[in-house]
Image (cartoon, rainbow, N blue to C red; front, side, top):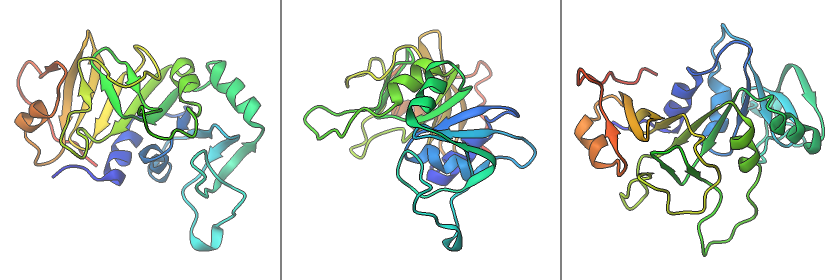
Amino acid sequence: MSLNRDQIAMRVAQELQDGYYVNLGIGIPTLVANYVPNDIDVMLQSENGLLGIGPYPTEDQVDADMINAGKETVTAAVGASIFSSAESFAMIRGGHVDLTVLGAFEVDQNGNIASYMIPGKLVKGMGGAMDLVAGAENIIVTMTHADKHGNSKLLNHCNLPLTGVNCVKRIVTDLAVLDIKEGAFHLLERAPGVSVEEIQQKTAGQLILPQNGQVPEISV
């Protein structure tokens, strides 16, 4: 069984470390806010000017003025700060974000990411992704392993316009967790019930398996 959106977010939440400042992109990454481990203290940043994002609000907590970069209503954690978008991007561009979690259309085996446009389709804007991939020390991508037509999104070389170059370190898909290093995808974990053969079939780029051939299942 492949992971659903929440399970992908739960797996990414395991990457958070105490004291981290983390930016969550639009889509699956925003769900990570719901699964921050209770025993660590992290500050989640939204590029529109909120540092200290809490979980999604319950019905009685909804405040239409409190939104994330995806225009979803959110809560603010204790100690949160609200500031201008300019100050938010100064934080990002200044290298003060430890980890950014982004969605993507494509990622290739050299750590390149294409996430902001598909030629011929309407684009509202590139958002802050280019700043985020340039400013963050660590970048994790969340996405489905293949598109709706079954085509791999983990490629030898990205076909779409690039958002960033040689910047992605780890990918969490609905099928697997992979690291990018030495010009290849390295398989670390697989979704429960998903075979290594299926992952190989749906990975167009070079895929390296563990030396012992054993790939543990993702625990969420």
